Amino acid sequence: MDRYAVIGNPIAHSKSPRIHALFAAQTAQALSYEALLGPLGAFAATVDAFRAAGGRGLNVTVPFKLDAFTYATRRTPRAEAAGAVNTLAFGPDEVLGDNTDGAGLLRDITVNLGCPLTERRVLLLGAGGAARGSLLPLLLTEPARLVVANRSSAKAVALAAEFARLPSCAVAVKLEGCGFADLAGAQFDVVINATSASLGDAAPDLPAGLYAPGSLAYDMMYGKG
Image (cartoon, rainbow, N blue to C red; front, side, top):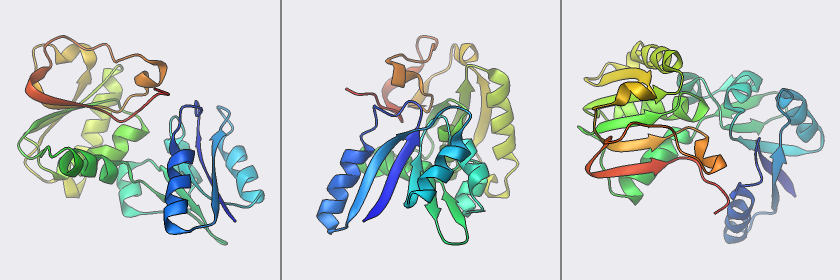
């Protein structure tokens, strides 16, 4: 039986084991899938132990997506562009890192929720691994404006500047980075939370009035509820 897991900290909230168990049953695959708590500062050692015990692959969630990027020996182009990895596949001679955050986010918003992003004003909250994985796919939908906002404004500004330099981002999108407080007076059609705040049943501290009439609020994280 193939062994897989999702690694994060915290991880008890994750619904991935249940979801993958259902996938396996529907497709008649013999696999086990567990939630793996990764001690902070010990990502590589934890993954090494999982591989030594027969693990075939991992999904990676907060706060380890940048660690997973470093751990991978080969990365897909979209993982390279994101600078973060949320999927590790273990082969005999390599560890392949991929990033599916952006593809999954866009499919959910544009297909499942029927909300197009082209020419819309989009706000992306956070500047960590989830935000990095989503930024390029969001840019390629050509929104009218895309703002990356973070508690630390410097981190958001640096992330926006990094992606603005990518050759694939040569589209007519107004890309900006700022702190949460700098959002005062702005309005957005789509607000995406890529921070981990909701894992603690909290919300980012944002100015009032950000949501335009008929706007969409989307949370990339989820808790136990």
